[in-house]
Length: 404
Picture 1 (cartoon, rainbow, N blue to C red):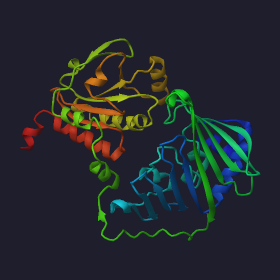
Picture 2: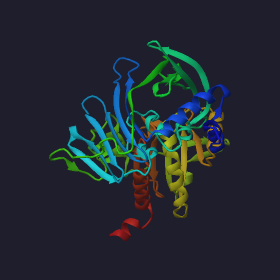
Picture 3: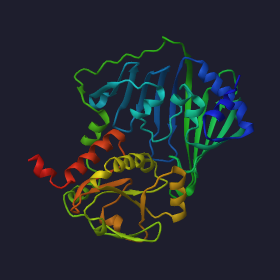
Picture 4: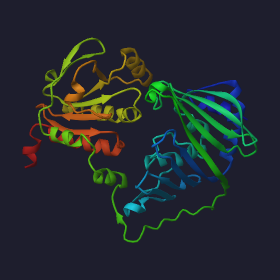
């Protein structure tokens, strides 16, 4: 019979599993695959004053029944997501709104509904059909960190190194601390962020998991009742985004839509000069991007797919990298096997011309040079495909006249 670590090596094209980590991985994977479900609480500890902590409570029974109640931040109330295996509901009682959709088929699809911490999820991967694959999917290396004593108890430590080109910068070190017992519950996850990624001062994010309890099939309460008088919306998160007050700079971004896009002259990775004027006649998806930006990396495959699907409509994707060395960019593209047009921002003023504050900052420019849409951030594949394609359709010559 194959051990869990051997199955891991066969099923995945990585990460690199150090020999001293295999015993812990085998024990953890064997245990979590053998239980039908579990419940636990997770507390994200604030690493600095003014940064709010976050508490999430989980319950799950395989393959797709679960509840998740997560704090969304001061004054925002709790996010509740419930799946009975057939239907899933997302609700924020403080806002008196909820949405309803088909239940995810597996626990690994829960993150499509929400993960508000911005950090990797661990509870659901542990309880998934393939804990090893899903737990380490974004890692390039897993090694043993020895043992750690907490409150007189001994714990095994795994040290994870993110893979190059993944959603987590390789400079961040992750430590997972598991109980050294017959029930190897995950106790703590540490994210050690170096100074260069944390504003000049290194910091450690700490996720503590507690109150673990194994569940049998049939256990757990996965019923949902909407709050009295609550409004049902099509998509809870899109509704929240639409209702959110404008951030500083949003008004300037809105005013750019419908106006001529500012021209630029930038070098590509081969040293060639590219101007926006040279792309006249094309519908351009212009994306301000960086390899260290998690939302940028999550959204880029969607933009690539849209550009490929709409190539017959003369749609082209052009990425402006925000001040990174050329070697960093090319290595990143190679590791992801992305064949995309990349321009270097350098010391140009293109960022200020387009009012770029946060990234990703995506602009759709019509064939006549008019800005059709500006999107800041990444709000998921479904939303991005919808708004980008609508902007492309609006930009196509004759589209408005035809519609009239």
